[in-house]
Image (cartoon, rainbow, N blue to C red):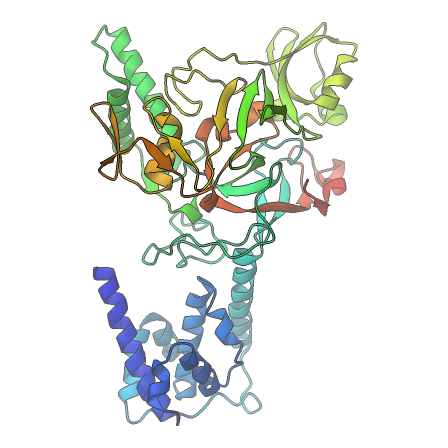
Amino acid sequence: MIRLSIYLILLIIFLISYYKLFEKAGRKGWEALIPGYNLYVLMQILKKPWWWIFLFLFPGVNILMMFVVFVNTAIVFGKRETIDGIKAVLIPFIFLPQMAFDSNVQYVGPVDKKKIKKSVWREWGDALIFAVIAASIIRTYFLEAFTIPTSSMEKSLLIGDYLFVSKISYGPKIPNTPLSFPFAHHTLPLFNTKSYLEWQKLPYFRLPGLGKVERNDVVVFNFPEGDTVVVDEQARSYYQIVRDYAFMLKQNDLQANHPLKSNEEYYRMAADMVKKTREITVRPKDKRENYIKRCVAVPGDKLEIKDARLYINDELAYIPPHFQYNYFIKTNSPLNRKVLKEQFDINLQDQHQIGENLYYMPLTLDNYEKLKEFPAVEQIQLKLTPAGELDPTLKIFPHHPNYKWSEDNFGPIYIPKKGQTIDLTLENLPLYERIIDLYEDNDLEVKDGKIFINGQEAHTYTFKMDYYWMMGDNRHNSADSRYFGFVPEDHIVGEGWLIWLSLDKEKTLANGKIRWNRLFKIIE
């Protein structure tokens, strides 16, 4: 309410100010009060191109344009000193009324570029402003650069790949937080502070795109569990950190022979401990960490993993050409790490020796066949985690002791579809709890064995959004939907489109750091 009141007060100040300024410029004062038309008239007063009006349609960019207009307003009314430009940007709600009601301030028009030569600093400043505006439009609504930081998509995408992500493939999202520093995602470089302000928040809205997310697309999305973040451990899910703390508290009670509490009580205690001992921050949807995975299931699909093999709608799913599993490799002599890197392109960081002549590493199907023929290799065994063995830290979705699934044996599970209605029970609630409570913003509560949504007892639920299931091609080295669950449609950012540069951090420029064969490669 306070924020709305401030907006209204500022709006009234600006409208009254421009009413008077329009009159000083020889226009009718009422023209300043008509939305859209007032911008058209203002462009005439400022002697600026009429198409500038369209730049106000882009959230985020419109904030930059507003300050550009304030500065140019000062210029056409004779306020052309550096201090005037600073006032127009920092205190326009004071500076504009002063100009409007000061009888000594008159309309003089823009600077005559033929008579006055801009300084080098001014030329560079103007160029920089419009470069920022143009780049912001491109980054927000068309293409955004992205870097592959982890091995979750190896060998389809490699650590050190630099990508362009297409926003128009699925339609660009209007920013939830338009008051944001240009080119920074959620943190300002060097300052380690938020790059955005939450004074203005916009609801989810997606502009029309070329199509919808399809099965097997490579998709960039906002991390669904990234709403809450432990600042000094941002790579891990806050919720998994809490579950780990809960497991630790339970183990402490077991070792001390103390009476055991319920899982819910341990979780509450753990969450309280994390909040008291760690620095926590909360992020809006569009400022959550960007992840890139392959969409393996779309709304309405049935998904199941059996012995590491993925099935969609009871059929074996698409296997990407450079897909990887982890394997145990038994040898009769040590393996040469350099040879594994050069001949098999297995990253040094992924080569693990876990015993005498025993190794553990990811292999593509092609490398699996080649390595079997290697003289030193005696046996290669796929790493499998069976179902039915409960992980005490509950890291596998839906993080509930009744679901004893693993990364290699999971489901079956159905991917929610917008408009679909399901029967809601205490048994299946863990699967949909986060959707109902957080993603679709309902008040969910369980009392006396009954489910209540927004205060009403519920036996069914109808989904408001489509959901997707994302998995990495490096199946045993990917934090994906097997761990964080469904990805809502309002978290989808764009489609991985083009690799424009690829650098191997384990090599130097002299011995092949630049992966020339990957430059300008379309992502499949």
